[in-house]
Length: 447
Image (cartoon, rainbow, N blue to C red; front, side, top):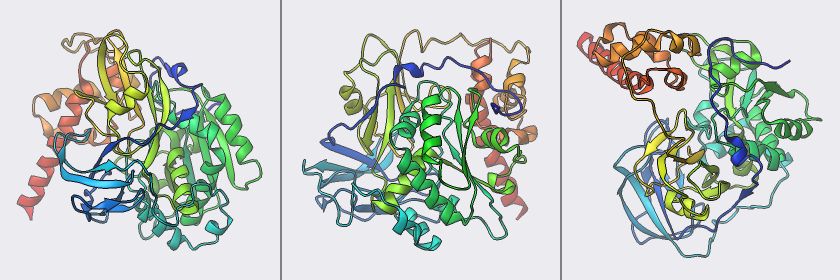
């Protein structure tokens, strides 16, 4: 039976054929990396190295800045060039550590890049494994970048019975997770077992959309003799990979408004995060690289690349043959939820799943008009909201009734379907920010 979520959703053009058959390749480490200290939800990390200091690949260069934070490691060996503010996908001025590579790619001791046996690792205590994951700087690689170690710590009284591994990769164009499941299935499953050990549970489900039959076959073969782990196939629909929608599709559980998956006994992790957990625990390798899809009609050679954190988009695109024709839009992430960028002088971060160079046809937009009151945005909203009304409230500053907007996952379904070309997600995002400030001010006044 093909599973899917209960309401809403859209079917944008997939365009995954550009890279779904392209194996992951690894460019040579770049000459310079610019590594942001803020790469996760929560507090930015704090630099513990200084300019002109020599560092090794995998060396800790910034420690967590708070409970919800993640350490940062050098992605090349060489010399710290400077610590300064640079433009990133997070903002125009983010503190970064820039490292000039020595070309040697010298790793810190104890890293074993060829290790694959996980039996000894699984014999460790959950506390030791959790400390290893935290120390390796793991964050959710599906896009949210929530520190993995924090997510694996249920609050007191919280009961988790199922780990849901997200292999849906529902964003158009992106195939990084698809290729990872085909090429690194044993490592993903080893990481899955590590996560199960940390959570102390015996059940895990891997959710994959039906447009990836080769990944389904490979992952099912990898879990064939592992008890308590299964692969479930979902219909191809966007946003199937959103946490709440995947939980509903696979497990039939609905996360209440304003609550987290933990409330229904589930922890969701991305397949790439599971592979990073395997590398951290078995290979003692911190999170210094990830697989990124470079695609779109304006890139000469679409590819899936294993990229060092801090690599500039300029270097990335050059490795793919450069820009072809006229560039209509540059996006970090997928076309539905990604961020449009003005420059190639932006570094890859832990949350970078894709870089899209869209040509003028792909990037064409409908001129924005007044709302037609057609109700299509309401029909496709997977959260059961009224995006047209939320956007209107945000645009006119009527925030007293904006509470439902907090449930918006900013998936972009409403904006995709809108015949009037309204920038609904843009408006709702600003409305959410203004609403949070309003509530914070009310709380301070009432204190």
